[in-house]
Length: 380
Image (tube, rainbow, N blue to C red; front, side):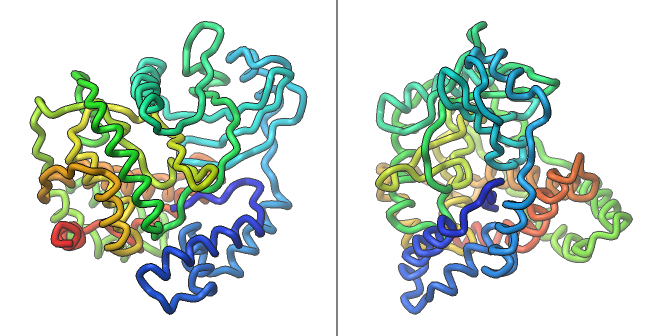
């Protein structure tokens, strides 16, 4: 699901809708601007265009304020200079809120990261990002603290800082063929690097929960009075069937991959250049497994986009052989994300997490991953 910024601009969203219309007309020539506006609202987790406009107005009157002293603490930890203005909120993500900081040394983007993203993990991503930059994959410039670290603990949370970069939105789905071709080219460049990796695959893309935990999750949803509990119950047999598909991993084919180069982690730059914002999930994977995950994100939502798929493959280049097991990592990641989103929707940490997780929970139920969908993608 796309994330609406903390300070959204309705004119910016109107331009997004017009850009989305181009993609819609590639597969449905009769699509109208109203269709694109409705589809864009859905991508933001809202019912229709009027609901999106109302959400924009609500956010503009309820802009979050940074906790007292946070900006100064971040500036000191990362050696950013003296803060010269009030920090401005950027967006709330699954990892927390991002902040726009201005100091006498420049402008910065400060982002919270998951607890498991340690400095060692960030260094792994930096290794890939630096190599990717040398072959033309655009990315923001990371800031190291005076101690040389990419991740610092500030007020009990892990933080990263990047030099501020003026960028556009993440691509709306369905993506146009032009955007899909650029995404495929980015994957192709990263895989062509073929950086050897001996670190184990991330447990998040390998480990799957037993069915009993899903049954308990359903019980929790019912006890919490969630209106979508019946839909969750109906989907569990479908997901148990999906869980039977395992990844087939040849250790000799493992290379260092971005592991999460998805539309929400990419921004459109000048001339629609793709800028890959997220590198901290980097880890070992095979090209086929990462492509399997990529396709479910770039060309399968909200439905299989044949033109985008063809363009993605064209941009990538020498396409590896793929079968149903190639989606093993995609399946594990999606099931874990679904489980965690529903958990958070049932028992959120705070109001920000509650709103985010509720939308995600509804989103995974509205657009579930299924074996049938993956088989259809392979046929295409």
